[in-house]
Image 1 (cartoon, helix red, strand yellow):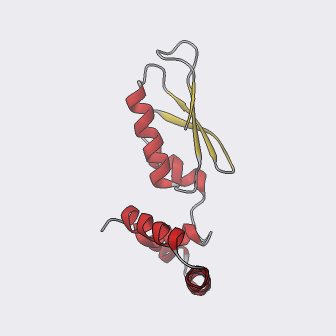
Image 2 (cartoon, one colour):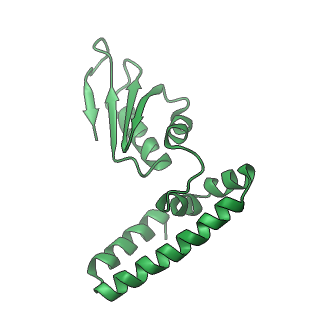
Length: 140
């Protein structure tokens, strides 16, 4: 089962769970978060980066606000070679500029790349110059 499918399944079960089960899940989450905090505190930069490179571990680190690589860096790395430029990262919003002439398919691919690299990002705003094809601003 994929990571996204597992997360979806957990969320679905929690929505239907009785309060004691939700409390149990929160207690386990807190315990595991404390364990991950201790692991990351003991890890050198190389180990922290290797841990963060694993999809499942990265998700857990994000869940507990322990990811060693900041949002902007993760987004910039994910967009390398796409023609997109990070203009700003403000809270849960990432604002990007796409090269003139890039179509909507490129915008969709850029949005997916941002969400894959930084799932905590809620909004991706794409800005294009007025001279570009399909000029304007899109927010998702």
